[in-house]
Length: 245
Image 1 (cartoon, rainbow, N blue to C red):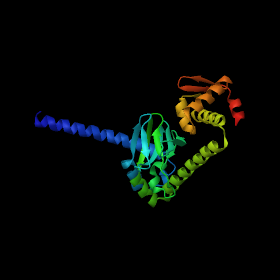
Image 2: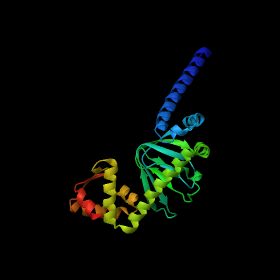
Image 3: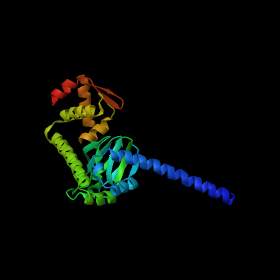
Image 4: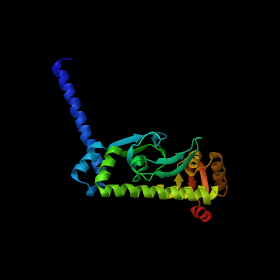
């Protein structure tokens, strides 16, 4: 390739990458502008967030974060569902909570939250898209800006409320009640009576065995409270499920 043509080719590539980068920064800015802390940031802090934040995409089943290995930062969920769980040395999983579009995951930045002394695992339950604010940037700005610092701790408090609720259900509700509560909660959050989840996924979500969950779902189906189809469950009698609780 002649030198002139090669230089033109390289220049066009750089221009293309520059335009793609500008477009990505615009999208990141639009996302951040919707956060409650944005208007309280200084201009240099806003620029730092825009330049360093990244839009990440994960396929369903992908491990996103392991507290024992890394400290990524904070995720703002744009699409999909992330599952946060504890993993025992024997490999047993206990789901703490799940995060959806509009939620913020701060436990993936647990290294900057001194009150958190345990490790969590996070996986993509469905295909996910999220904005990642890296730990080093988050740590620096939270030290400088009380509004972002307050936002991070408020989000952490929300997640601990979710953990307490999950523990209460495991301790005080029987399996049938836990399954019913999960189906009703999932229906409310997804705004549909059809829950597109497998028995295995529900078992992980409520901290039980798949076989036990399958038996419970079949019992509810016999009572015509729900109907079972491949990969999904439809609530037929919502009021009766509520009465079980």
